[in-house]
Image 1 (cartoon, helix red, strand yellow):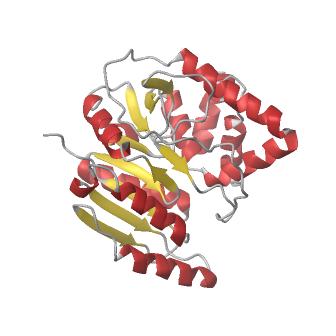
Image 2 (cartoon, one colour):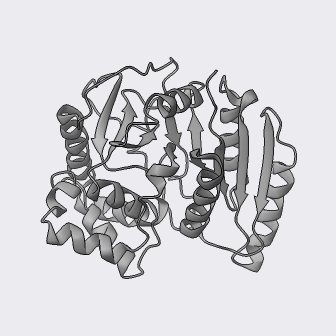
Length: 302
């Protein structure tokens, strides 16, 4: 019998988004047999106390999972520290974890895909994580494929994978430059990930995700993706502290099961090109000024 991974959901002050995330997760076929851990960050300001408390009252009412544990922080850790600490806590205890933030709607087959893949690749050291979101690319991609690095919108990993996470953005940036890897790190210059990492080092953003991506990338690790997205991100809608509304990341959620089968343990060149083309076309269609604004948004949202 398959050992189901615990699920970690991270929330702060968006009640509606949290409710939508939990309700969609409950519709997954494996939800009733899964353990759910919800990390509720503490209020940053006096004004946030009311919304944080409202979310915690809602969390007391959740049903539909095997077991539900709410970790209510007394202080505000911020998104990066909250996720880093929470993921570390779960993988150190259970050996694996499925991770969602409070603005991610899941396909009913999201948990099935994550758990099947976690089982299938558990002992494959080349694979660092599993990812549920796929950009709305125009190219039809395989049912599953690999990309180098790691990602952050609905993902899963094992302790052996998370142990490779490097918290020092400076160390990561120095190595990328020393090895002349910044061009490839930027999806062949289609997206400014290096600038995002540089901004993190300067304290201009607090992105844990850019460090997760860089950590995996520099270790030459792979992440498994679905050919159709299992995640819809509702968070880039002006509701976040630093976010304005954009829709270029909107994608259709898969309503079918995605099968895990043996594929070549190498980056899929077609998928890499498709996503790079998507990034480039997004910049062109939106215009440079809007694209730059979106990059600034994602420095905080991702």
